[in-house]
Image (cartoon, one colour):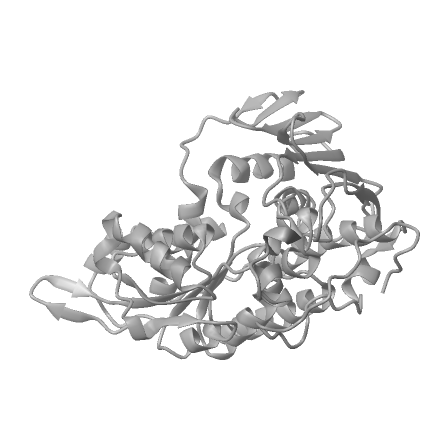
Length: 427
């Protein structure tokens, strides 16, 4: 059975009897069954607010119970946005369950939630995820899952704990929950284009969150706060553009290869747009080598006034599968095919699957594949930063720690110099 097939109509489930399921007791009032699942949101920005809405849409008896962020205005804005939607009656966040600060995630976990949505900058993900699973919470975890290899190893260990505890862990690699893309990879894996020869993926787009000038930093704002407020521009927080954004394309490469790792990769990258502060690149190109000689090529760029494209070209001995923009997936070659199924919202589907798994007590765990895809992107970054060929074993065992062990919201935090190929060493 495919993971996506674990979904079921939530109303049909609840009408089926309201029995005790996965620790959620049913309370029957007349003919109404209420079987509340308490949801906590860590990271109340735009993505977090969207994920919270999708969680509440996924289950009629889910309720947003607590919320955590470093800013009260983000919490207020998130609740205001959610309050204007059909799920407004499912908002149950009392003022004493609005948590602020770098330790707010732990306060939220301890507040009595059943499910935690993790949508903070990815540098925080390994610690937050480990705390959730240690406390026996189901999790929706946005991509990527770490910004350095020690973080990936931590998530892999947490994944095994989640399995042992029968907890669901669903990732934000949303294309895995897109029907047209799922059907396309089924075609690939069943020989629709013959033996795979090469994979070429592009992620050409505009800058995501440009770094503001240092002169705009408010007086008295410490380094830690400044960096977190501009998180996309710092490697320890975002992982760089290849890990934070183009990882979606990397994930599809991994999917095509059945999530088996490559042998090695080489890569190039750099910074085209001048930036005062920050230390990320704005373009990468990576060549991955797999055991059977298959090669996958990824190119991503974030620049203004340039050609934009987010596409995948999967080439085989009998044809090519193209995934590009709003056009339906198609195969050209010996076995021509164009996808013609029914579209649905892949972001919503992620949460539908998660809550159905909880209701049915049939856990879903995306942990290993989300760690594999994150490290695959990170491996390309390592190769581009150092100018060296990097093997999968090197990437997995890298000892470079990017995320500070101790963070002080009001403390100093020097910025690492931007990597320079041929000078920056692999650690």
